Amino acid sequence: MANRTVPRLLQTPAVLLLLFWMLVPLSMTLFFSFIRYVLNNLRRPEWTSPSIDNWRGLGNYQYVWGQDSFWLAIQNSLLIVCSILFLTVTLGIAIAILVNRTFPGRGIVRVLLISPFFVMPAVNAVLWINMLLDPVLGLQGIAVNGINDMIAGMREAPVVGGFFSLWPEFEPISFRATQTSAYAVIMMVTWQWTPFAVLIFMTSLQSEDQQQKEAALLDGAGAWSQFRFLTLPHLGRPIAIVVMIQAIFHLSLYAEIEIVSRGNGNKNLPYYIGELVNNNIGAASATGIFAVILANIVAIFLLRMIGKTLME
Amino acid sequence: MAIVAQHTKFSKIAWPVLAWVVALIFFFPIFYMVLTSFKTDADAVKPEFLFSFTPTLENYANMTENYDYWRFARNSVITAVSATIFTLVVAVPCAYAMAFNPTRATKDILMWMLSTKMLPAAAVLYPMIFMTKAAGLYDTHFLIIMVLSLINLPIVIWMLFTYFKDIPKDIIEAGKMDGLNTWGEVREILIPLAWGGIASTALLCFIFCWNEAYWTVRLTTTDAATLSKLIEGNRAPEGLFFGRLSAVSTAAVGPIVVLGWFCQKQLVQGLTFGAVK
Image (tube, rainbow over all chains, first blue to last red; front, side, top):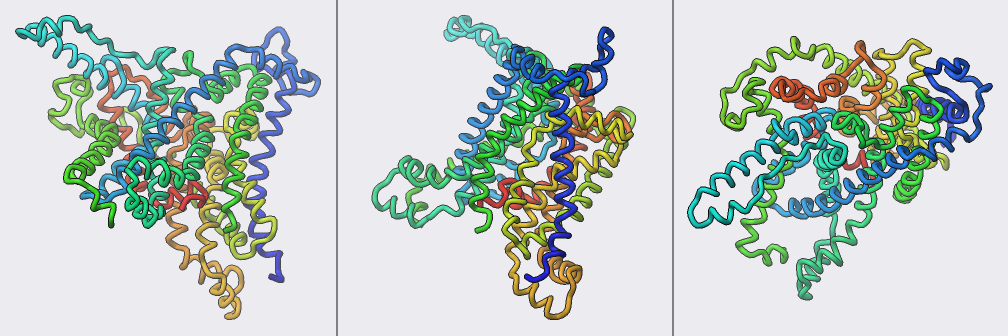
């Protein structure tokens, strides 16, 4: 096309906005990561404002690198992200195959299944940690109490009573505690994101080659080998995409951690940064740069994959 | 279909039953929240009233009194609607130019836009607080609208691009022959043809804005605080307020879940950037 000015002009606002969004805050973070910058310091008041005179070089990076809590936060981020990925992908494949057949009420089943994905993260976390998982008042507490009462009742019964008297009293689990809060986060995010995986795998399954499957059936291939050698390879690409998109989203998980435990012993990287921001800006910024590097490692793979299909 | 022939009677019954059971398990937490919202706070924690109770609307009637719900809801509506409109105003021309006048740089620009989405928000938290406080924008609608627009802009451009790409170029060329200028092409040809795509993109963008829970929590205190902030502030009601908390949660997510049902298909395209079809 002869006239290139108009198309360029049309793209300019979007490009400029994103350029600003990407460059300005990030370069500030980069600058802060090289200086001493703390919000409250009575002894060294000159450190409380950002200035080039407080240059610290790589000192903030060294400080963060040497902190146990930084490594715990990374470990926790990875634990949470990897567990969620494993659960959502396996559950997602199973449920997508389950719903891929036609049966009565399939439309309603789909609607019910996708619903959790649209619940806002704050509500998701408040709902799970209080109404479902609370050890006393939540459904968990009620269920555990019910089971204990039932066992107590069975102890009085003739014949089988002796067997049930061997059973212990069940203890409900407190998911706000240090050791367990990560599991609560994993549970609630898995609940929210499995529908996403199901939706994508289902879309992909609909384009699966049915003739190939019929041929395999005629050759006497069982259900398992059909899945293993036809369906699973077909899902390879969607699985990779689900994994990477979720990795990017879940590496920056925040609201759920905040609501479940206020990061009590269960900080992930964004939460750790959020805490440092209350005082030590230099260290928070250095941690932020580490988080950017971590996200970029994931992002490069994703961009490569999407780039391939882009202009088809 | 030969595969159907393989099904035994058992799997014809067991399969749908299993599918229904799984769907009901996934929906159960939402159902339980809605159910609890119709119980009084006292009933909500008593096991004997788990499923049989006298329903009451008092939690909904007292939402304003208990939580100042409508102030937060108003902020959510203002920010999410404005951000969606602003995003579309910026994104439609951009995606239009990219789809109908692609250059060698177009692919790279699209990839770069997507890469901004992958920047961890926490990494730029302090600069955002610092800048917005310095500029007097902290806790204002304007700030939240801008931030929501910026974080959704890449996905929206991407979705619109995949829709526009499918429109035959000849139609636009024909428009040019008829003497339409660029604005005329957009108004007379593009928008009528891509209306469905634009509408579902807008819907999805609105949902993402409504549910956003990082910037809306960290960059607001009262004036621009959205429903995410309201719920986050009531994270630990100690069991005393399950009824009223359920009501306010239901009011916060109900409309969005229903809207979400209408854009399932677009969700796949939008979130996988057209890479899964």
